[in-house]
Amino acid sequence: MIKILFICHGNICRSTMAESVLTHLVHQLHLDNQFEIDSAATSREEIGNPPHYGTRNKLRQVQIPLIAHHARQMTRKDYDVERLVAILKGLKERYPDLTVILEPGSAFVWQTGPLVASVVDVVENKGIRTAILDVSFTCHMPDCLEMPYQPAVRNAETMEPDAVKRAAPEENVYRLGGNSCLSGDYMGAWRFGHPLAPGDRIIFEDMIHYTMVKTNMFNGIHHPAIAIWTKEGKAEIYKQFSYEDYRDRMS
Image (cartoon, rainbow, N blue to C red; front, side, top):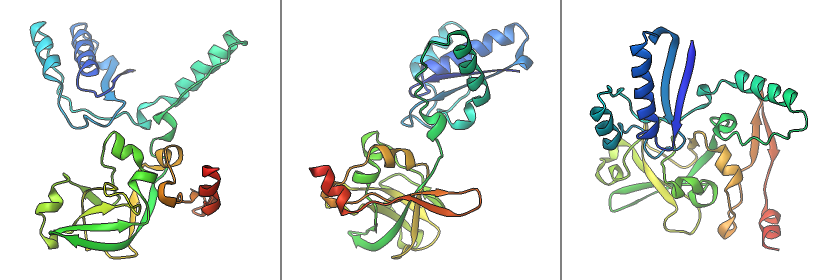
């Protein structure tokens, strides 16, 4: 079986067109059982959306069937890691003086760890309930605000941001707020299976990579500790941060 994955930024234009074209050609040659063809995005901004109207129109013009598809982001399972390792080893053997510099991106950091937070307070204003956390979107998850995208929260349903304005109290829909002084340090909404209260744990899935490389200490907000969950089921603290880290950044 030959596996082919087409990649583009949003997975609604180029990669979906390539997937449809190659699938059509393979079908014409009666080789369907020899190929596995798919497409994916590098970004999250179009996830769930169908192919772009320009792609649909062009395929219709050339009479190539459009493959039913909704944009998805490439994940670690899409990588053939063993094959990549073999290719790099072969390249090094053929060109021993060549230095290979590889930027693996999501191949290595996808789903490597969550950001674990706790609720410190729950406030309500004009019917909107906000759970204040001991972490910050601005300081610890800036990519969510810059892209922007709403991160997945374990055991919670991701909803449209305006849902928090319409939800009844018994629906347990909350906006999540950060602990900096910035008025825009919040996101949401999410629906939880129970009312949130101080001390409840909130786990943001797949956030460790950006929390480690794009963070800042604005307003004296310190970084979350970095911990490793071992194969033996133990949590080992790798690094903790303090006021001195904030002070030294300013010097």
